[in-house]
Image (cartoon, rainbow, N blue to C red; front, side, top):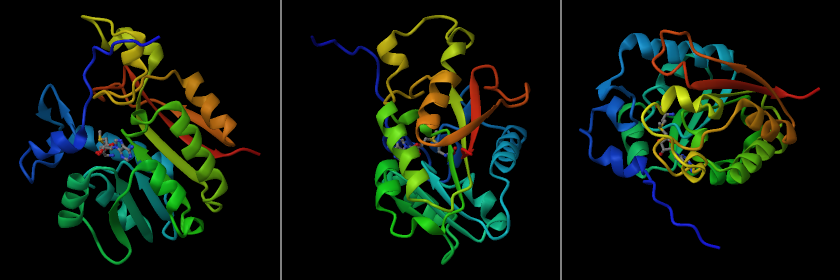
Length: 235
Ligand SMILES: C[S@@+](CC[C@H](N)C(=O)[O-])C[C@H]1O[C@@H](n2cnc3c(N)ncnc32)[C@H](O)[C@@H]1O
């Protein structure tokens, strides 16, 4: 049986190309009510990332779905090495032009699956990050990514995954209309797939990771419908 999809798909690459070349916040939709996010909101995001990753000076960090690197560059001084990857050619070209710090802190165009399965030196990474990006992967891809991170990235101690839309809180976000099941679970929409913490924990647990969930302070514009999660190895 075939179903007709009525909801819109979204491409960050196409969207970013419509923004000014230096409008870093709009390129990755870091906006609140269509205005670029305030410094105070950005500081809250960076604090959550720092708390989750607990970077040590000798750490080497890999990031999936890093976008244009605006957030990533703020982590460079806290780690010895960094590889940021994203599926968007355009966003990575912006990251390279404005934020890359060769040779140790660099960006490359790679989709999430490709990045995790084809990385030639996975054992050099000790931390992993995906902020506002994991919702753009389906369940199968998430299982694959987390399993590969566990098995191939043998020295990885912590993964921080942030800004995930919470399926248990859809009524706090969708106040005027309620999307159908197909839209809520579609990773290709502008908001990505909505998952409960329990659903996420199951995927992580099956791949060997222990989960600790957190939410942003109430002053954060999206704290009422999003959560963050830190993964460490089980047992
Ligand atoms: C909301 S932006 C987040 C960017 C950045 N992490 C930040 O927080 O500013 C989502 C990013 O996910 C990337 N993305 C979507 N699907 C992806 C995939 N399959 N592999 C890698 N990146 C992907 C998009 O290109 C986009 O840069």
